[in-house]
Image (cartoon, rainbow, N blue to C red; front, side, top):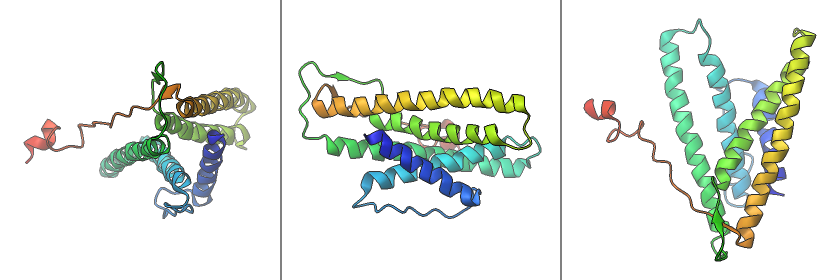
Length: 202
């Protein structure tokens, strides 16, 4: 199943990040972009998500220096753009994979593309990791650990459900029961022709 591959790579990424556990560490993708295309994309996607997860932690520091916060906000904006780009690369991979599939006459479209489901699966892997950490944190109270364990149980159930849904969608596309139709993200706030503040500064 595709989701097994994705979840395995996401765990690999998250574990690798936390060996050093800093947003400034160098990135290295162990998967070849040509011979291991989807593995390469999944690894990069989850790395972006993992770094941004920690950006979001840092920027919520009530004592953060305003100048540092502004710099970090710009980094989060850039990360969001990278995240969106990676989703589109992953969808392009699937479009290529299924380009010769002839949809059935009664084929339907899904509410989201495969890659946006995978995007949620990557974020879910981070939630599972960090919630598990809370269940074993030594200085945490037993009540805190119990509450977090209940939340972790729900997250793990959600992970199974989302994985199943993604695998089902891919199978349906492969069988011609569903078809892919991808809309590129038309973000306006980074475009100096579409954002009136940026346009006005020209």
